[in-house]
Image 1 (cartoon, rainbow, N blue to C red):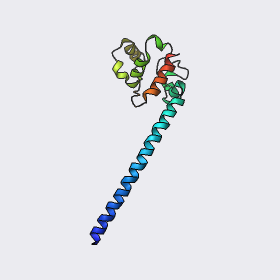
Image 2: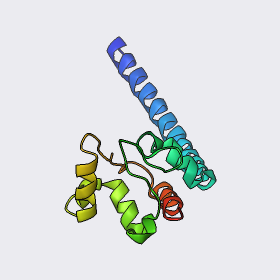
Image 3: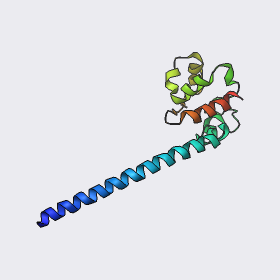
Length: 133
């Protein structure tokens, strides 16, 4: 066996070992991550999610509103849980609604961020919390 063949055999052996390790550790990590995320979402309250997403920066610590965002009381009068979750995911889709147009005029220097990368269960808990106020 030549030196080149030895190096190729060693390279292939290392490649197979690394591939096997990747497969083994990836499966374990994915399972743990899903379990950990599910547990975390179940433990968080709507109020904690409100704080984590930094909603208070514009809407106030007690949902009373600020110069940058409206108060968040009596939302159930205008929103269902599903509508509110969809709005939180992509506020731009609601730009043609009259209430949203009025808010844009009242708060021209502010914008509602998109939370489309936040877990739907988390947004559901946030929506339930907001709709209960």
